[in-house]
Amino acid sequence: MATKLASYDPSNGELLGEVDVTPVETIDGIVASAHAAAIGWRRLKIRERVAMLTHAYAHLEPIKDELAIMVSREMGKDLRRASGEVRFVVSKGSAIAQSVMAALQPRNAGGNSWVEYKPLGVTAVISPWNYPVAMAHNLIVPSLVAGNTVVFKPSEETPLVAQAYAERLNEVLPPQVLQTIYGDGVQGQALVESDVNMIAFTGSQATGKKIMASSASNLKRLVMELGGNDPLIVMSDADIEQAALFAVANSVENAGQMCIATERIYVDEKIAEDFEKRVTEVAASYKVGPWDMEGVNIGPIINARQHRNVIEHIEDAAAKGARFLLGGVEQPERYINPTVIADITPDMLLEEKETFGPVVAISRYSDIDEAIERANRSSYGLGAVVYGGEGANAVADELEAGMVGVNQGVGGGGEAPWVGAKQSGYGFRNSPEGHRQFAQVRVVNR
Image 1 (cartoon, one colour):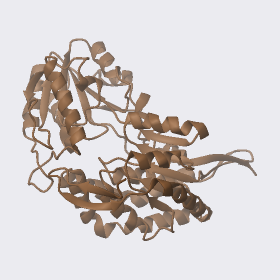
Image 2 (cartoon, one colour; image 1 turned 90 degrees about the vertical axis):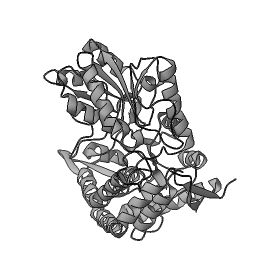
Image 3 (cartoon, helix red, strand yellow; image 1 turned 90 degrees about the horizontal axis):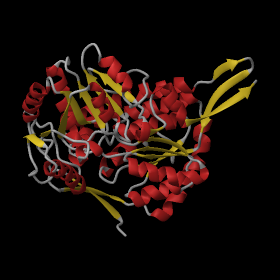
Image 4 (spheres, helix red, strand yellow; image 1 turned 135 degrees about the horizontal axis):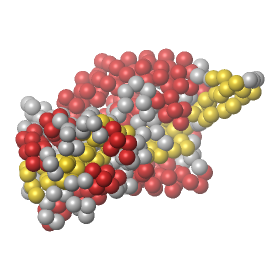
């Protein structure tokens, strides 16, 4: 059994560093120590926990540029996106903690009844590689503010980022309040099966189902975001320029490795030719390469397995008669060039599955009800977008997704939740209601 977890630059295979793999037999002990630490952590006033987290996030400020470069090197995304991710987390850490605190304040339910929000105990946070700082942050902060301790299992693809992030926070946090374990699915499974009280997970639908099955015997609390296969409908009266710019950006940026990436596009046949032409022009302007190359906005695919998955989807489309407007089956090692494919049909993998690569997949429709039916024909339901004029809101109302954008992307501002429908999510995060899922609701009559 490996004792070291190696991290590689996905752009060239260079070894970046190693961390110690957490032995499976030690995970129960780590969770036990988290339970012990939870006693003192939950006894702090919620304002004291928020103050400590605010101080901890201030410790990230001096290393934010270094951390952004680490994200680029370890995950592959261009420095613009990596810097944006890290700077957002560092600048919003205190604000999100304050938002959670406000959501968890006791409230009068009428008469002599008060609603309180108490810690659950220990939360297992299992986060993905595509946004290695932001996704961890989104699950760790509400859990800690609620008074839970956290055992953090980052993706095996980005252990160095996780290590730098967690170690900096732990310069302020009490011992064992935030602990990190390293490894792959073996360590993840052991953590899920341990004596944790809650599992907060962002990752694949398949892994989410396994977590749910493992958690059923003792009914652990679950909050899970489970990927997407997001549709975009472009109506005949849409602004073609704006729709094309969004379609390309949301399909190929971050090398398409986003849970809310546009995976399939349905465009009205009346404007399809103009739309396809403009999409192809825009996609051709994107530059592929490593993070430190000037002007790059599409980095490498995270690993060989995922690279092969994208290639298989492209090959499947070619074999089934799709029309290639940009790119093709032949792709460089480690990268996928921006690829635009038209005439997608329902039996193609590009429509059925989550591709997670920089591919713009387009299909024409003649009837809006057909477009809506195909958009909804998926087990996923994270996001959906409509570009159009007068009837766009009516179309948006028909879409089966947790988040819908009309002439813009998804993801609400302010206190809007981040939520998936169907098999894209179980529970949700952000917003007062989302923050409260990290706590036990208790009614007290005083």
